[in-house]
Image 1: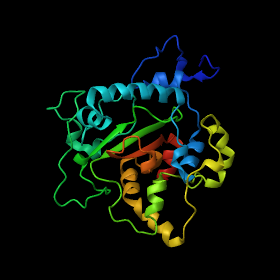
Image 2: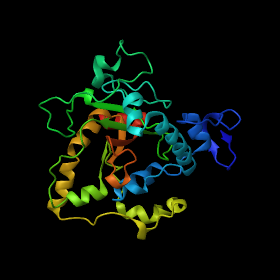
Image 3: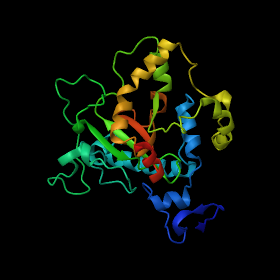
Image 4: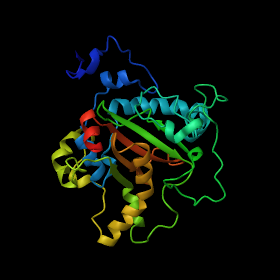
Length: 298
């Protein structure tokens, strides 16, 4: 294990001498060497469950690199949405553009569409796919696969090396246009989140743990006073929030099989969306150990 400049170590012997620092989306090796994780898996899950998704951060140096790259992309394509539609998103296809490896197997879901011989490797299907006339108009667990693009986040948040940060892009809005008035302001301020694949001895962490983890966010100036989150509602309101995220929850559970993966998923509210022109869901996913997979099957 190599020791890098700031005293931290990079797994598998990677070091600045063996891993050049590039521009544009980083490789896994660059993430390990130059942008080591700021947070543990337990901290990340606590931040997700805290009620303020703004606690989820990208490494500051990686954020600077992203901003420089994004400016160039906007000059070239006109906007980030244009770039995504013209190049990055691959509706109904396997992601063959990411620099970051993934253990996620979507072959059962994508079927024959996971490899389209008419599309050269590295070329996306351009534009927005057509929405069927009988669509309900928002994201559901059985959404047609050609309306979805599941890819690795090319610019992941600061997550441990064993956590995959993926994005589910969709043509349809995540939430129905008609939301219960009792929870609509809350959903628009806080967003949605949930957890899948949790074992009985590893439930989602309680938000009460947050104060002990706030020091990890000190470089961003986060304090309890700066949190933006809603108070717990009535039982009826909590159930309405749960129902609002149920379709996403079912979709994630089906794609990241609970026998193999533990996930924390979330949908940023409008105030936190970096690409508000296209709906997307974030998924933090940890592939379970052989012992965990065996215990799940027992």
